[in-house]
Image (cartoon, rainbow, N blue to C red; front, side, top):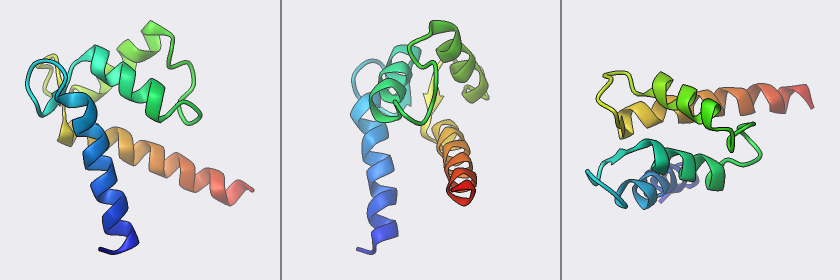
Length: 92
């Protein structure tokens, strides 16, 4: 497996580490998303312990408004984080 493939698999595994806890095994509820963000992106996303911030992120990601974040919706967060990280790398 290439380094990129390994990282892609890692993103999938992290998602599933949190999504299998409650409810549907392939979606995140708000609590699961908060746990994932707080534990996996503590230096990347600010104010993650602030519930209104989590509520806003969840609302933005839940495109179909079904009360859960699917993997496809989660990828939007990953994409945003990657874009920001890419910009930040070039600032250094």
